[in-house]
Image (cartoon, rainbow, N blue to C red; front, side, top):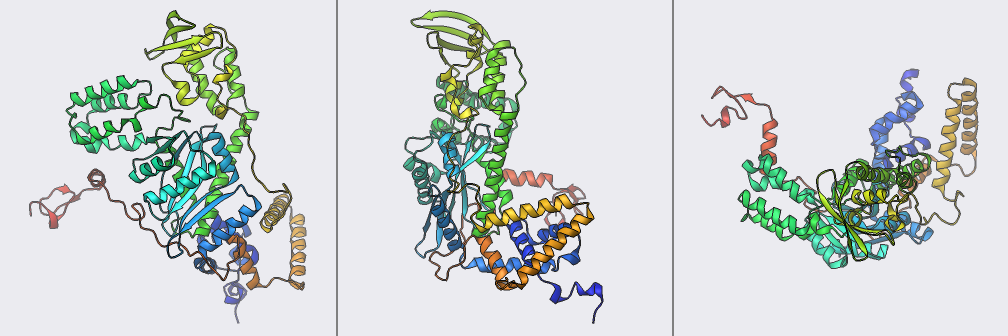
Length: 593
């Protein structure tokens, strides 16, 4: 009836085998669509005729998968995470529903995230991001900085409304989960976040993102001042300067406002009234945990999660994709931990105190300390020395010409510098290192070694009772795939071994097919979908999937006049037939028409 070439395209031949179905679901976890997964599978098998299905069949399978998820999307997630909590009680997962039993809020943190907060939770940033799921739920990751100066995720929230009640619910669960609140919390100027932080995090120091505030300067001052480089340099020198005292900042701020006629400017007056929420001079005694002055850490994390998730993803897909992103983040941290054990950074000075710093700090932090040690040796000098009671008052000049007062007690090797770097960052400054060098101190005093920056990393992770023992089907499946790819990799290039492997696999396939409990195509498809969802769908669905949320970031963003003008300037001009000039109009809207 048809040639050998045409047999491949017959409907009877267009079937997805169990291996291909599993491959498609694994691609879905990695946010790879059906067409790309089809192409990737073709590269693995080497020929379209070996696949047995077309990209249309793969799309149909994905459609069946989504149809299975659709009615019980929220229920599947809740069932999956209840199972996780049974396996590991340290897993924290809470949710809330609206008056119609639709899922509206979710908060969760696994044991390792909770351990990370216990170690690095002194400073935290959180920000909302959008377009990560099909329900337009707002994605709220809680982000900190680890001992490698990299972003680390403490917890995750999903909310349907960006109101005070939703943020209060998130923060209350965060506080209950972690047991305490961070010393510093950084957000943007969102009034709902500000109100929620004030209600729940009573003891935290709330800080606004400086970057969000400073980006508004150009549109607030007008086009003339926005192009004035002297004004921008003067304002940045006052706002971003971490070494200014409160009195110095206020005097210099008022000078700039008077010099450029901004004393009565409404926006600048408002920013000065809330200066304690964003100006560095007011945070000298607050630990910043890696200089968390902006929500850029959260912005970076949102960008990473955005590359793993999709605005069309169901909740089941979103959670799987998020877990993939977290696994990648933790793998990178493990790699940096390994680098600290195997690598020793290059020294810049012959001082023993520098070598001591290299043995206790992580590589990323050591380079910051090394910069301070080098500056203390090369560019800093002691201007004066005076005894005051049981301490000695030093005046130290750094390479920038700034003068700083350092009070030292030789009895216990304690120092207090007016730059307040140790209080803000947890690392000694160059003004102290110059004194340690002159005193021939070979090690950093123990009271100035902050544990969060060191190579040591303590704490426990809940991994179940039987570590290393394969107990669940997913782990067994992973082990099988690993062994399979190892065998294929070793046999690659050796025809005899490849034929032998193919024979063994074919024999095992025949045994599985002919056995009494053989898996039929229909049951195989259901088992693959169950494995993907993490839990079978119950006939009694208590919690409904969320409604499509409507928030400020779920639709098209309203552009400012400045953005519209900038976009218009980048567009190519065209010839107007009326005025005979190249412009951004034509004869229909020509001003001379």
